[in-house]
Image (cartoon, rainbow, N blue to C red; front, side):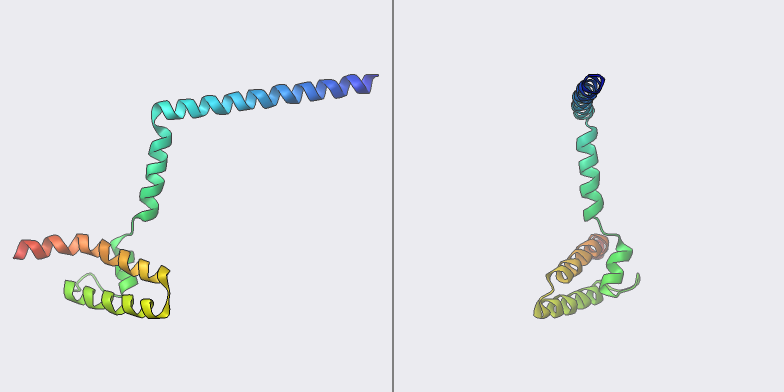
Length: 114
């Protein structure tokens, strides 16, 4: 008899705890959406995963800080074509992203001298 009562208490207690946990989780989600924390966190994750530093871009293309834009384009074309022939889409996309990153640095200088 005592075992049955104890089992019922454990089952009822775990049910109450599960409902309380679900309610607390829902309330946390509601609070996060009201504050904009959830959207900001998602945006930070997206920004962080897509951004490439100029040092990483130079390393991918094999150029230095003092390389000209023509040299960067030559390295880009060479690496892009090699990866297109060998079928490595991942490396090809990394090369393209590296060129895009360095383009933002070099293009304003090129336009300013014209």
